[in-house]
Length: 334
Image 1 (tube, rainbow, N blue to C red):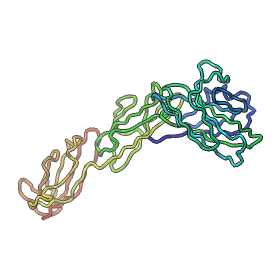
Image 2 (cartoon, rainbow, N blue to C red):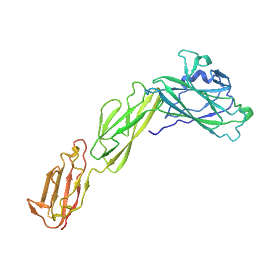
Image 3 (cartoon, helix red, strand yellow):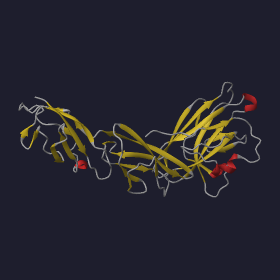
Image 4 (cartoon, rainbow, N blue to C red):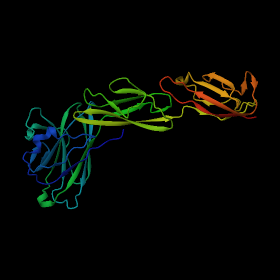
């Protein structure tokens, strides 16, 4: 599945804020798909476990229902032409002890390694509990009054904070159905689908069966669910093939090569009610069949028809989806 990221722009400078950012950590939510407003790092020191910096920012996130979830966090430096001095960025994931003061370092249990880097980095934190609240700590000793302002982007993804979706089978012919399933959302999530297919059967809160209506293309549908206060989505892709391969001629001369008219694909169970009709140039029906178990051999009532062009109409008559008849010309050659 492809991974989606949220970019949050942050600026390194001493904020003259009325309240420390730690006090609002529960409201500073970071999601895998939804943007949030920009924040500023605080100049107050924060020291807990292996994490110790003079400037710190706090982001809360909730995991979905995936056990042992994996978080991917990406820190990318932006607009840092004059970034010098104490320019290391620190990163850690922690648990905030319930009902504790979020501005007291002892209220946090670090659950990841304490990462640090002075360049673009990607950090992976595994083993996260499902349906659980965590805090991301981002810190630095960079003093903007001494070393200049720098910004960075924080991006998160991974099955801990996003949903997964897929279709089975992912390749079908027009007239057949495929089943889509989503998983990984928060507890009690009911998934929706966009765009909603025209012909659909909702089979559960997380699954549906649908019937694509156009052949020769790959369609994309997104599953949408929630994790905590975040709306997240995951796309599925289904390739729709043409159901029939229709030959345009037959040569009923007894050489066992194209002695009958080949129409492949009608043996699929979904086309058991298909009707195949062939007409001569005057509109007289010379062949008619429910299904196509016995291919047309160029005869009408046991008599060989003359060479020339004939016109066919193939009605697939699927139960759950209307497909326009296939019409065309088939020629008898000798």
